[in-house]
Image (tube, rainbow, N blue to C red; front, side):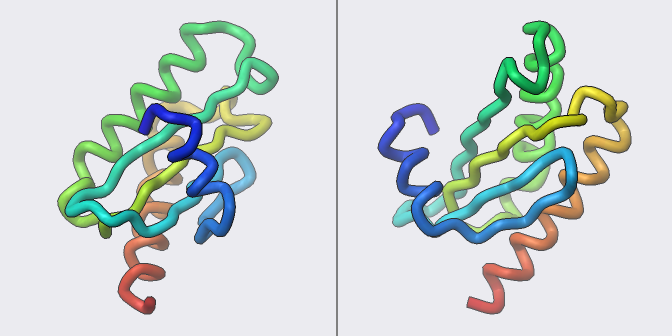
Length: 108
C-alpha cells in the first residue's frame, strides 16, 4: 500500500495483533489478495539502515505467507524496542502475529 487513504482506511477500525515491539493492524479489502503497508518511525529507529532492516524482514515474512493470508490490508507499526530484536526473534514474533490474523479472519 502506498496512498495515505489506504493507510487511513486500515487505521479507522482495525483488527489488532500485537507484541511489545510491533503491532499488525488489518482490515478487509475488496481485492483478491492481501496488501502490506509499513510504518517504521525515525523516533524508534534513528538510522536508515536499521529501519530498512525491519522493512526488509517484514516484506520477506509477508511474501512467504501471502498465499495463506486473507484478503486484508495489513499495516505493520514498529514500536519502541524493535531495534533490540535480532532477526530470528523478530521473524518469529511476526509469524505469530500473522497466525493470529489468520485465525481472526476465519472467525469473522
